[in-house]
Every structure is written in structure tokens, then in C-alpha cells.
Length: 191
Image (cartoon, rainbow, N blue to C red):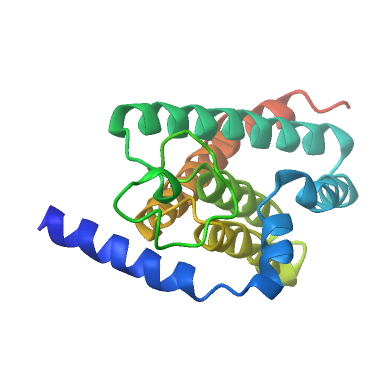
């Protein structure tokens, strides 16, 4: 069964990657870069400080940052343990795919998917009661993750597992924030 999953993964990757068109390469190469999304991160922080008292907003930002550190560490440890070659480094398929980026690290699971979905989900959980439209933030991780297939560096299962890890991590950190930080903020509220 595992072999069938890996075969499906390769075939699906090759098919999706082949849909790319040279005309759009620059756009997808820009989407896949983290600095492109800095204005979105600034917007997240702005919305925290707009809807919450300063002290609460600071703790929300800290929760997001600690979660990102956790997710990046988990991603890196998993990549080293699994040691799956990226498509661009896989000699069986790298001659038949479009490659726009050439990272040398391992593939499983995608750090772009895990971090972007974890950040978006935690921001969504923090802001969903204040803004009905926060679901729109999920456009970022969807584009960010998809770009990794387009540029030739991640298989679909890398993205699927990264997405699930990111969402689950956000849920854990949201619950921890509610259990540990919110009571602390309430008990230390200035009179």
C-alpha cells in the first residue's frame, strides 16, 4: 500500500507540475518567497492590536511566534528523520519536471505548508469573532503551498501532511493560549 501511495504521489506531482506555464513562472517564484508575504504578517499584527488591548495582542503575537518556532523545529526534525528527496533532487523524475527552485534539503513534510497553515489557523482562531471575513486569510497558505509543486520542490503528500500538522499545531497552541495565557491576563488585569 505504501508503494501505491508513493506512486500516486509521484504521478500526481508530475501531472500538476507539468501544468505550469513559463509565462507564469515569475509570479509563482515570487509567491513561494517568504518576504513576499511580510505585508500580510504586518496586517495580522495590526488586526490583533486593533481588536485587543495592547497586552493581550502582545501575548497573541508571542503565541504565534512560539508556535512557529515549534512547527519549524518539528518540520526540520521530521525532514531529517524521513530523509525523502525533493522532486528536484530525485534522479527518477527530475529530468521530466519543471524546476524553478533548487533547494538541497529534504522534502517530507513541507515547511511552507506547515508554517503558513499554522499561522493562518491561529490568526483565524484569534480573530474570527471580530471579523467575519478572516477565512479569506486561507488564500495565503493555499497559494504558498501550491507554489511548492509549481516550482518543483514538494510532492502533494508533503503539502497535505504539512497542512494537517500546521492546522493541528495551531489548534494546540490556541488551546494552550486559552488555558495558560488568558487566565494569567485576567488575574493580572490592572484595577
